Length: 186
Image 1 (cartoon, rainbow, N blue to C red):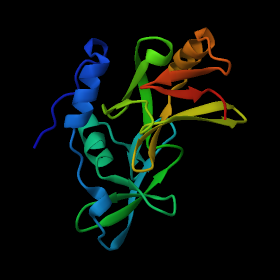
Image 2 (image 1 turned 90 degrees about the vertical axis):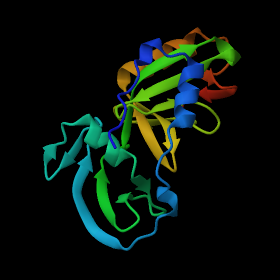
Image 3 (image 1 turned 30 degrees about the vertical axis):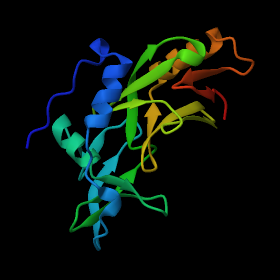
């Protein structure tokens, strides 16, 4: 069954994004426990590019299909899982990248939604928290997507978040979304 093309993120409201996210039914990978079958010969680079046997996967529909069967294991590893097989996949940082931000409202009334490199939509909230990790090359911001899977927030999107945080009136720099405050600090 072909997947519908992703809607134009710029024309969506936060309410539209919430409805689309709720309607996007993912496979129940958390309930599938097949035998481990080896390695998938796949990896996801830090910039969100998916590779198979060293070559980038150029079809977004394929990447999106694989992303829907991705699971984080209790040991921190990543697998592609179906009801009958489980294959390891290497992930350099996070399996997704948040490439676009949609913001509505200000301060405590703000809502922040992200479009991922796979077309998936996520609204920052208590269920989908933001976190910021300090590294030698600067902060690495993340948003929780599902089941221990996160999206690295692209640098340009992080700058939008930082701008909102610095414009806010909170004592600690941070951003609000869906009634939750996220300090921009590790």
